Amino acid sequence: MYTCLFRGGTLVDGSGQPPCRADVAVTGNRIVAVGKKIDGLATGIIDAGGLVLAPGFIDIHSHTDTTLFRYPLAESKAFQGVTLEVTGNCGLGVFPVQAGREQELADFLRLHDFTLPEEWLAWSDFATYADLIDSLGLGIHVAPLVGHAPLRIAAMGMDDRPPTALELERMQSLLAAALQQGAWGMSTGLIYPPGSYAATDELVALARTVAAFDVLYASHIRNEGEGLMAALDEAIAIGRESGARVQVSHLKAMGRGNRGRGEEILARIAAARATGVDIGADQYPYAASATTLSAVVPQWAHAGGVAVLMRRLRDPALRERLEAEIGQAMAAREGATGIMVANIRSERNRGLSGQSVAAIAAVWGCPPAEAVIRLIVEEEGAVGAIFFSMSEEDVATILADPQVAVGSDGHGLNAAQAAGEATHPRSYGTFPRVLGRYVREKNLLPLASAVHKMTGLPAGRLGFADRGLVRPGFAADLVLFDPAAVNDPADYADPHRYATGVVHLLVEGEPVIRDGELTGKRPGRVLRKVRV
Image (cartoon, rainbow, N blue to C red; front, top):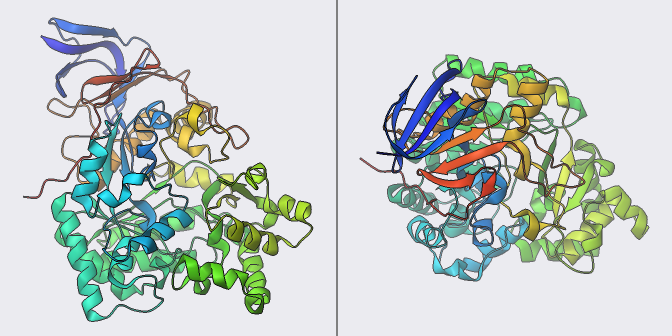
């Protein structure tokens, strides 16, 4: 007897092949049959008529590493049809934790808007982190990457210099240990210190370890603005020299000077692929990015860690230089009017959340760069920001490329509990936005192609052998959605709004969403890559 039988739905199987009418049978946590008509008894029969059945969506780029402690069901992702999140992106991982350097890592993560749980010192490596996450009871699966920043902090702190031979060997050893324990690759964040302090040869050396384990090297490249093409060339060179699979994270062209360069970016990546470099990319379908406000503070000011950064920001002798360079960085990102402050935690400044830097500066009666410094100092670094710095034309051009996967760059959140904090709507709307706005409304790409970019494509990049497709023997991670109703109501003014249109969501064959409502079931787990 089948556990669950979907009848009469439109199957979009994740391969990119055209939709077809099919039945799909599940027994336990596996798909056991796919066919035009499946007979047999089933504990539950679901009439899928008029609906689309697809593999559960894989969010190849998320930052749910620590929000899982507050929101283990990751509701904002479940309502999008996501069954698997890849964490540890942009070099911002939470392991390894080196004895004696715990505070440096904690300060670094808080600077990047990570809220660390009380239990965070209970883990030291991938295995202990994964065990602790598993104990929470997850709604969906998680596949962590190793962050480059924790590797560097563990070996050499926040120093702005090349590693010694022994320090590089230490990073390689820690990376290999995490990969041996089941991590899915390594990520770098080359705009963020200490990742930005790493030269290409350091990254190639670490990527060779990644290649030896046949996992993914994902990179927030060194520059997404004026130096975009050189940064892409560096990522390509790392892939060519190391043999690693390269994934360019949240591919974009930022700033007025880069408007209309979407096709050029894609052509550069395609040309590298044609020469044998295994390189791909992912993207979120929005014209605004989000990161920490400290991203506009010059990198030299970050050297030595957060405590040193705060001293520099308070130093009157450095104020003129800092304000000039912060002003230049903001201008490159569309200026102070195009930067919206988010995720302020203090009661004193919480009312500023959702306002632009320009508006805050006007209230305080100071230049925008001075307002940035004051905010970061008063909040001890923990200030998020949304940057309206891309063109819709380039977003659409990149999204239409069949080799670019979909990733949110967001968090798994609970709308009721997170309400009141300004955040990017991508945490709630990425996948339905593609299906509703760009497939149904704009006809930018076919439904089968869009689903492939959310399922089979990221599964292949990551190396999953039994996920991302609707096939007998594959994991029963499935989403059934209404193609006419799937939508992303979340926006910048009101971001904490769940997506609509997902009717059923199965994780390991268990219903996480049934008839559009959360069931409260927790079948998710940390997936560990099996080494052979």
